[in-house]
Image (cartoon, rainbow, N blue to C red; front, side, top):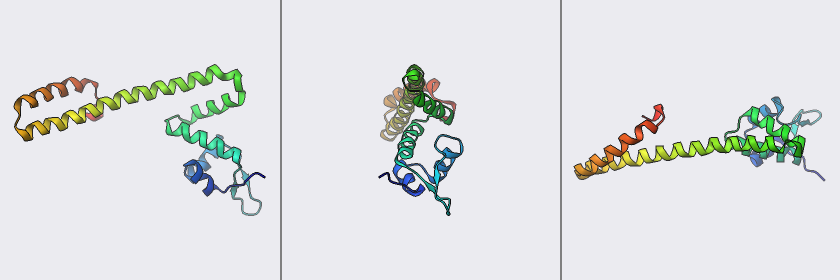
Length: 147
């Protein structure tokens, strides 16, 4: 027996909001979702939940709607699209890798700024000068917003 789930149940299981679930149906990432006769309430099946959990994972990794569509289409095509699927995932892996590098620089900047104020609090002019030099070296690597 397959279980039939409400939109609230699916939202809780997938970690996607109800408006997001409706939107994913609207843009064709899922569904059309079965409706209950008189009320018109959405009724999801386990297969829908599995697809939505996969989409939630992609969304959490910053994959956009168009790439989600491509991913879904490639999944449906199976082994014939393996290379295309690999390339799509590797492209996002590279984007995340670049974000990690950027976050590392931001972390270093914040730690150095804290060290600067620590040196000032201690009155350690030599440490302050070293930290200032390090911060100066970081500045070209920071996004304009972070300066």
